[in-house]
Length: 203
View 1 (cartoon, one colour):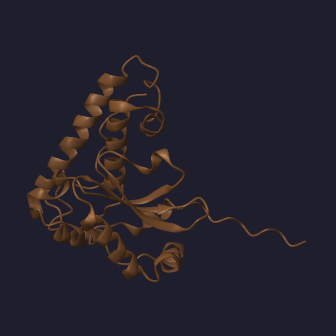
View 2 (cartoon, one colour; view 1 turned 45 degrees about the vertical axis):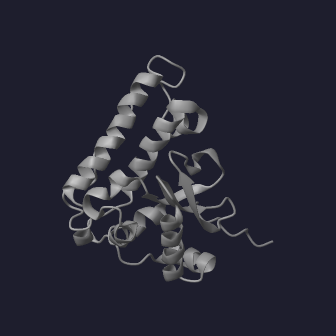
View 3 (cartoon, helix red, strand yellow; view 1 turned 90 degrees about the vertical axis):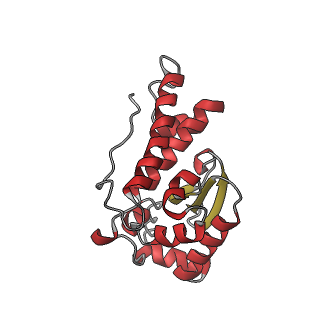
């Protein structure tokens, strides 16, 4: 299986003014570097025919790190939508209900998510996760660590690597997070949830 840099689902400048085309290019350049390195590491080896996600789950060392970073970056771009096309706003339906049940309200979830991101020193990721039992949780992982090696399902990912925001916001993660919320595509986030179980038939 050929692992390549996936195309953006929107123009590179479409996330402005929240994320500039230059910031997108910088972040995508790092993503592509991980992919190119991974291509060399897995060529003709046992991981050559695996998907990016499977490599990140099963490999170790440099191979796992490159695959995890490339996978997380792809997840990140897929969940964003230009504000002019409906990005931002509020989640609805089952996702909103789950956020309310897990955190008290959508606003309290955002506050918990931002607090976790701001407390993380150094690069990494902040996640909205769904546990196997359906409950939602916020987690922060360092460096290239992702939820792929555990039982939880990633619904939302926010990069805490400097290349994601330094060009637009310098060291100000708080402003970056405020901009991030203006671009989240809640429909994509909701689509990643474990499907609700159908009620058991009446006896």
